[in-house]
Amino acid sequence: MSLMKQELINYDIFPKVIPVGKEVTITLKPLGGHAAFAKDKEYTIGICTTKEGNPTTYPRRKNYATYKMMPAEDGCFHITHTFERECEYFIRVIADEKRLVQLSVYAILEDLVGKYPYMGDMHMHSTRSDGKEHPFIVAANYRKAGYDFMAITDHRKYYPSLETRNFYADLNLDMKLYPGEEIHLPGNDIHIVNFGGDYSVNGLLDCSLQYINRGADPAWRSVAGECPDVMTEEEYRAEVTALAATLDIPDHIEKFPYAACVWILNHIKKGHGLGIFAHPYWINNVYQVPEDFTDYMFETHPLMPLRCSAV
Image 1: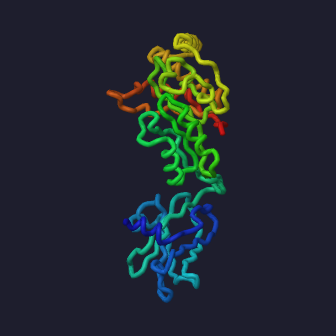
Image 2 (image 1 turned 135 degrees about the vertical axis):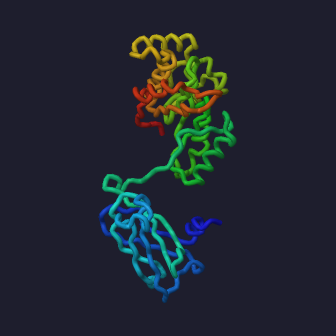
Image 3 (image 1 turned 180 degrees about the vertical axis):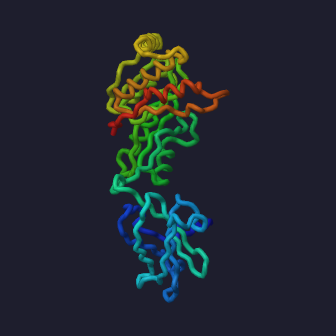
């Protein structure tokens, strides 16, 4: 077991997130007698910034502070310090010039104080497309890893995310499960993730229903059983072509694929979802998307994020 893993098992430190410029007391606690500090021994507590360089090489930056102290009656170190910069800090316990423990705390500016950093994944696959695990197992493993939210976003398929939400609906999972899919439509090989949308964009085309395996049933194409009617590929192509004629697309950018991205985005917006331009530098023989096309996507932001409302 690595030293870092041993430290995380044997010691706790709190609070882990602290405001910049305010004096706070950090407690470093041994978790059990095997990790206890000697009560009659003086230790050095070192506090080191992570972004101001090595203290021995850049000492004028005042990037390292030390305190001499013995453990308190409760066996913990209670270190009072003012953290002057927004960054990760290492808290080190040193005895006889040997580092025994190194743990991290994070100093943040006022704009982040009181905010919780959620951890989530907006793009993943299951055995419903090219993933390696059943969607229910994927969700369970993400919860086990401590994630706050996720969405199954299988290729061309929306229903696996609904299956997963339904399977865990009666459990207090402590993790938000959003609907989702990865969208591939004819005439456009750019992959776009529909995260949190109320209905499936893949499921709008009759030619895509062969991949969905659930047919046109709105119960598997939408969160609440309400979604636009299925259209033919010809109707879709006509809509995208008409949309392209209204957009000021430069000559070096292929009009149909770009307009298809906008068409997809419009539906994601309509469903209150978040559009994600997925892996433009994926190598599928060559780069999946031409680089100047990718540059134009970033310049025009057709996938500007929107609030996700699906629950």
